[in-house]
Image (tube, rainbow, N blue to C red; front, side, top):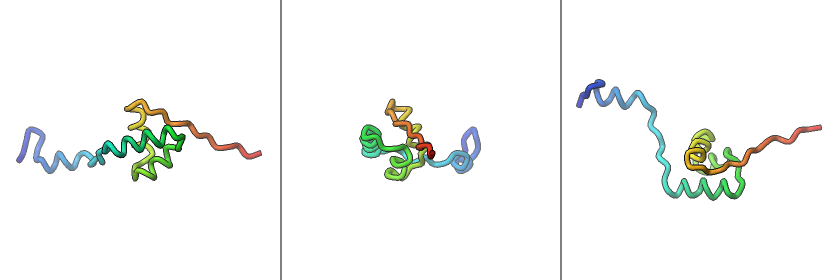
Length: 73
């Protein structure tokens, strides 16, 4: 059914579909962050991008540890 912005199909194609976070995924994120896991490890375990993990953590005040590579001598 068309609306003020055009057809419903046209509106849907403008925005990417976002994968909603479940309560279980959110709890896993918190648990893994508290255990000191790196954001890339959390993302892999949750089948998310690292950016998605970082944004979710930031939105909910979950501290992610900063990881720096060791310098080679």
